[in-house]
Image (cartoon, rainbow, N blue to C red; front, side, top):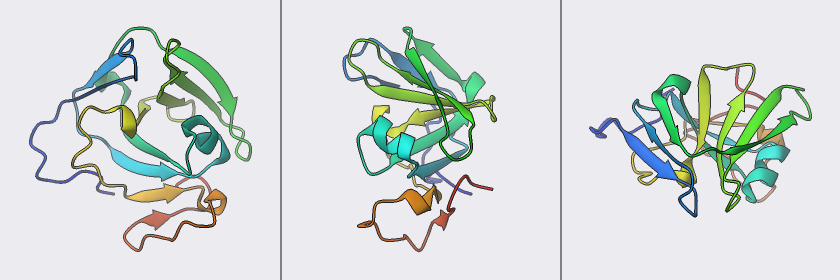
Length: 145
């Protein structure tokens, strides 16, 4: 699955929370970009879905100390660490315990979001009914396989 525009030449990306207390730098291209429609991501993002940028965990350098809230997937039971700024509340990262080498970066926290293109949508069966399927993206009723 391709997730970034090939014309993106600068690999490094940076981002931060709303108040700037938590910042980060990514030193690698994303593995993929996925839209998640699960109930927890809708609640966590306050939106219809979460735009998730998956990157290798050891390629993310974090400044500041995010707070964590643990959730269990309502349908799959998998543990998630949802990291956010304790000062302004911005959701920044999610760690999936079943894939510990990957960190999910919330796309809205990136300083530059150009070149990111979602390649798939997960938990489509939980998508809000006003959303239309995108013909260029793979869709999964639950987790991607």
